[in-house]
Length: 188
Ligand SMILES: [Mg+2]
Image: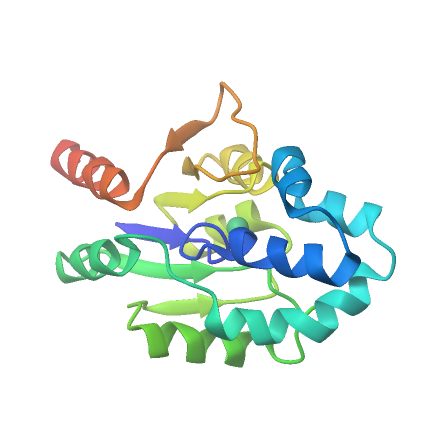
């Protein structure tokens, strides 16, 4: 199967890493911030000059952000079983000077296996359709809805800040994702 995988908050714990830095930078109470769990868009809307904060910090953070538990192990296993891993990220040139190079080097340095990396993707559903994707996994509700629109079998990766929607299938962790793919492989 062709499996499309998001990067931030699907492979990596990006949000958990950015929030403390936001708190320090803007002199905010981290506990309060945690309890409000603002989305990236909400951070952008509520904090002054957040675009400058992004430009200054995201490229540094993106190099050192931790990988989620079991992500590497499961992706390696899936690839060794013959599945294709296509990494599709919305990281773009407004946030990073070279999102492809930065993400590529990060994935390689962490030993995350992939067959193809696509950055700057605004419409993930369309991109999945173009790439012939069978299964798509992403934490972001908008991206999941976009893929569902293109009839892609979509799973929303559990995150600390997205609220679940009934009509989107959820996956809680990487081990669970492995089992989903195993079951799908058996039934096809
Ligand atoms: Mg994401």
